[in-house]
Image: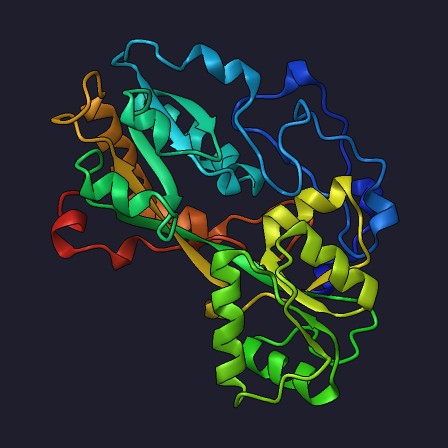
Length: 329
């Protein structure tokens, strides 16, 4: 099934009713409404206690009980960006880790994933490699060397009529070239990493003249998405935040291009340094990192599919680590 056609399934088969009492810390999305039409997903309720707006999420209220608690050897405290949770990957991996090792994972998803770990509230952190605070966390001695674990998926989004005819392309630069050639509206998402990617695409496409079709008005994430929908144009954003946001604030956009490696954004695991922070469950953090890098787990990440989407949206990245890291498995 192609990237676009996988989003055309009957949304009634994908929708589910959640209640706050049924929601685990690892569960935000199990089922996603169709992204092909905003109206189809408008009625889907996500039990998230109204956490975050505009595509941003914070940890659930019940996670506060874990904050500041003394480390228990049987528990691994994981602070993470929300992407793997929203994309369903943690619902697949964490129970498997717990079953294999006997550890229980206490998951907290935060906008600030590096502040609380500095205060001894985490054993291991997962964030994008380019996270604003990742470098300082490691260089200040609070975190050990980052280990690449997997990548999530950005997407080129566009209107259903697709005026530039980019649907199902696997070369996102070629897609951008067609957008420029047809002068179809392109909205720059000023999310830092996505803005950078837009510049890469512009150069890769031969630096076409930026006329009225190319709009860079400082819009970010949901605002950029809404502008693209209003203009019947194109925009880039992370696939999982787009789908999550589109459930609550539907727009007439579809993910059209997914397969290009340029659209992958790598995530790393960083063990909290026990020489700098007291109370770290060193063995638990090591076990979790080794689980993520194990060949069987990397293959599991490769095979994972979000319900309703046949395309791959997470990509294994363990092989990018130094040989000495992989040789310890």
